[in-house]
Length: 70
Image 1 (cartoon, rainbow, N blue to C red):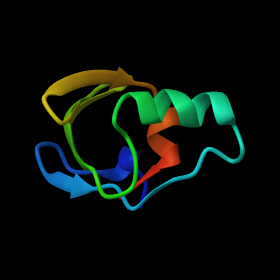
Image 2: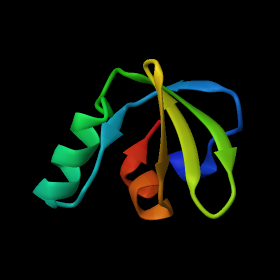
Image 3: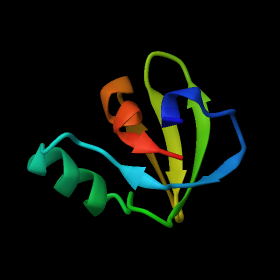
Image 4: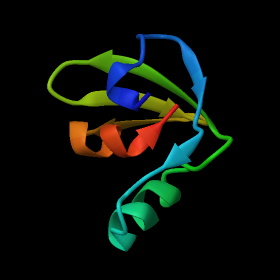
């Protein structure tokens, strides 16, 4: 399932990142530490997702959330 369907506060492992060939988006997500095998937690859901990766929090939009599979 993609990150948009994740439960709040539950830690997940990223299984894949599918950017459909968008190298810029893939590079951006990788720079955040968003790649297969990394742990990710959705901290808040409103219009965008607030996620925790490693020791940092990021605000990502639903399009990015859809590209991250857990």
